[in-house]
Image 1 (cartoon, rainbow, N blue to C red):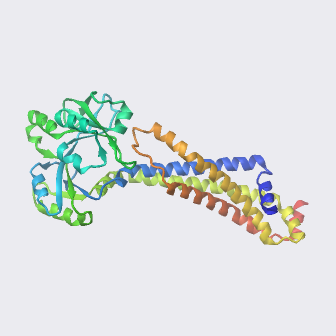
Image 2: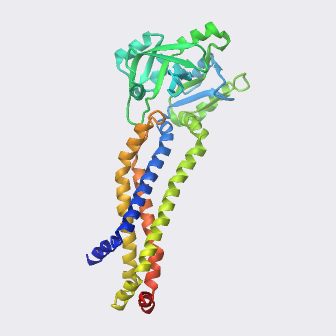
Image 3: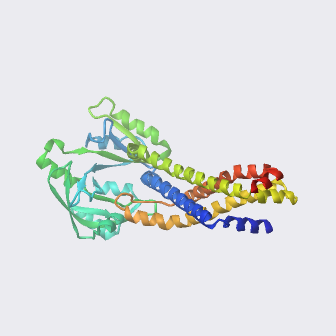
Length: 385
């Protein structure tokens, strides 16, 4: 008890220095948690991907399409239980900054493959009846204030012309991992309009969404699908939904890696600051440590005082940083809703923050504690003179 009391007393002997060190620790631990959460947000879509779905696309690139008759051939592959069509629309709502994901889909076959999208039965029925109807995710509806019955004008860089859709349904997420930032409309409507303007671009699919019976057989089924179209004019590449999603993350992987790296650089910087604080503290108190040794206290006791002080500073700064992480992340997410659909805070982030704080405390106090424990009584007392 006396030891702990002495440690706490020493922590705030130089109040300004200790306070600034703690503030630095709070900022560093908070920044580390925020950056780690931002990195996790990039992978939110792939984390929610289902193992029971495959994505078949043109082997050359997503910008190349596939004939619609591929659908029946894929459906005939053993292990496949459903196939649907999904085309990226790439529309802009009113102005360029209002960009969100829009897909033309074969609704009757598409949504049974995605049970994580939850509809109200009457709204879903209205959506199926209206060929110009649209289904809007709850997050997207809240972001732009869309309501059932609203009209959404879009201009696409892929499909020319003025397009207008009517919101017929707003779907919700089955659980917290599901992202509902998409707009879906009928592929048949898109295909009909394309036939009028560019007949040669009609009856083509961007990707086929494939439902399979056994997720453990995904690799074999994917290989069988691709073998079906080997040496054709439009060879295919079939992969799991997660792999397909991670392919988009890979396009910006350098940025993601940089963000993760910066989060650890922040910790290294505050480690240097904390180490300097403890070094100054130990140097100022050499005479006190020498006096303790002269009174019979061993080197371990002296080292324990310094390590205890360093760990206490790290614990206070780390605890405050962890406590502030949740409100700061929520505030940051509210400002970046147009970029990040989900910004999941997971226990792993808090454990990493705590581990970083502990490492800072141990490393910052290690060398000053070792030096103080080895100081000779005469040298320590001479330091005063």
